[in-house]
Length: 574
Image (cartoon, rainbow, N blue to C red; front, side, top):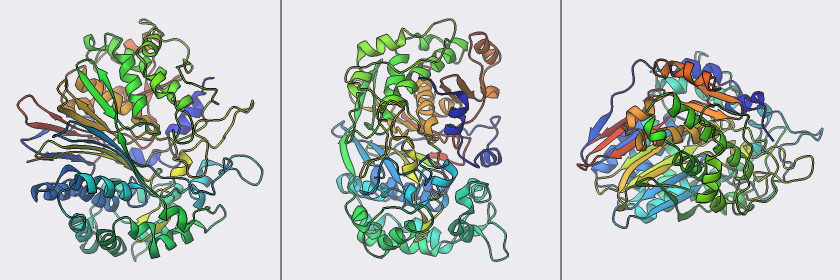
């Protein structure tokens, strides 16, 4: 079954975010120049976060140590995207063992959640704009617990010493980033919630403006508590009680309990790794979007994409591989602790051969449906409409260990509710609002108590044939994340571009009958050539837009990084 283009647009573009995107877009004519660093590097979405991480690295900290410091600052200066109240996936590379580990800090539904969580009194699914600001939209936050687990295994510095820069900025003041200010003044329903309005409104009644000095003493106090107590600081005790009380307010309250918070456990598993030409690409397993990226790469590997660098045929092949990838992802992916996800079948070479053969080399056909990989059961067409409130970071330390991490609060400012100076997530709206189809077939991503919602987050790490680090990459962007990441990896691994050049390539989200893109970024003639092949690219929508980050190791051992010029980030090394 295909999804109408109008439905896709609603899924890719969160409520009230179009104006936010327009207000914060950075001109394509002035891409950030790539930077090089000889031994260590960080690419992240806010300069202050990068600087905080570099201080940790220079003090002898590991890549994971720096990730803790970077996330703490991002939660302060980019609260529309991630924070202490959200979740995360991390892919970690150990330079000594060449092992790649996936850390799952995805939020979980309360034990009392039911498949009809987002149904109203009329027995119909709630409007998305209503659901995202209700208490029941929030899952148990997992980002800090996940970071604590990873840092306990791979950290070098004391946990308590990783929050100083973020605490200083929160207590003494930071300069309001342009994206944060634009989000605070946007029409997004979360920005209009009482907590958000109070936080972003100055004494004279006006909203904070970009560049102004802003303080968040409550956030600083929470960081001091996390530094001393670890994740228990927010999953138990007074802050946990405040979270439960806050989520029980309003007309659509949560079933969250203190036990739900206290019992949260992050997961560490081997990453899912698959060959791609002379490389190996690793991502977290489901419910992340990582395996979908691997499927997209597997399909591209069966084309001559390498012979078509940034030309009509190259982008045509990318678009058709993307359509096949999304058709499978949206039918079969969910939390593997609750549903059978046919990941091995989807990544089986014979299955990838069959999917690639569906690409007509000359003309785009009708929207492809999902395939039938080994292990696939009967699944309902997905009804999930994922917004975007996410960020990505990549870190390589001086010993060669690497982190690729995507972190989120779901929509911008999560559900708009604040506790302890941070926003709570609305991650449960990443579940399918409709748990079954008309024939009773269950959706893989239906709500269940204790279940993690499906995610598009897909932090990737690339290795060479000897198991050495080649690159790390990823992006925010709601469901567009999968295509954003696929583009960057294709650009770096197939077209041999540097991270910045690959990031600067036009974004294209090809799904069903929609080809959302950035027409002005293509070389002359490509847009017209694509149209002749049945691929009519139109501007947006992209969820919240990309925020791609990447770092690669060059043959001489130095590092080269890139940060998305569509945001405010940077890549810096030393």
